[in-house]
Length: 202
Image (cartoon, rainbow, N blue to C red; front, top):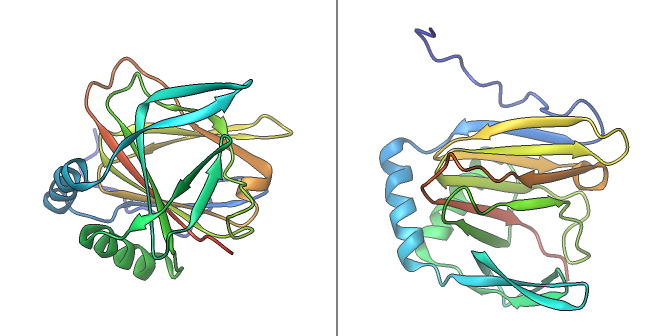
């Protein structure tokens, strides 16, 4: 049994090679995280995601939203979204994330997973609209979920647990050399809201 919380080494690279992933743990206390979770669920303009797979349009149970400082277009899975203006809460979270990471972001893709039956398959965020090797800051509000990385060549896997109010940053050549996913699980019955701040280059 652990009597004390072991401090998280935020400078530790969670990947053995070919990229940089830093986990900062809980950057918002429980009260702050709880408040943001409720606000994000209520105020964000959530929509079911769409993807074109083998020529067919697929509508996901997972919901998404796309926000930014300009009406950026962002295309992935052969569908294009236009960014909505920042909300007050998203700007607050973005400001704190930039202070912690020393990076800047101009957009945010949000995902709402209602429970563990919803997740994300193996992929990398290598869309041409994104800044090459730019930082992507991933924040979790709600259910604690496992997040997995797999090296594209060696197939080596790394698993992390992302907690309520926590921050994970992927940068460098992570998207070039690694895939990541949010695995499905029948153990999770509550929602998780994931914010991924990123930089669009036009």
